[in-house]
Length: 136
Image (cartoon, rainbow, N blue to C red; front, side, top):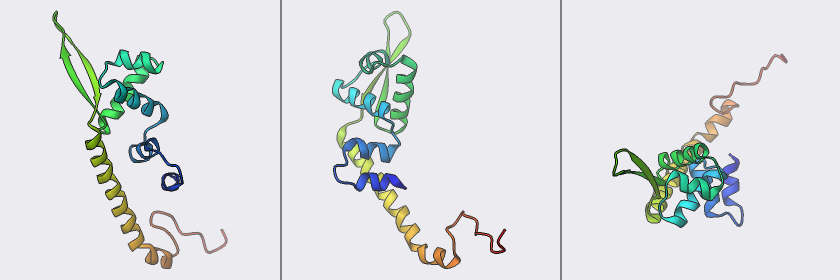
């Protein structure tokens, strides 16, 4: 998993951490940072700011919402209908979520390490077929 090597290198940034923990791409990070700077915005506002079409921006915002980094609020229009406003989750909550995610990853790595010797003795990692022994 080269993402761990990526994070532990000298000079890793908050963006690197968010990318690794939440699988965010550069465009999604750009949308997140734009919202962080604005406080809140509509899809159209963010689209204009990041110079992307509305569909791409909406896709990025949806991923950020599902990751728990951004929330969506519906606002009613006077003549009926509604629109959505997006805003970043509080920084302290994002940090708390990230700490929990790091803890989950550490626990998973510990489980892998616990089975490391037995997996080596069997000659393979779980889920990987053993190499043929008959030369085929």
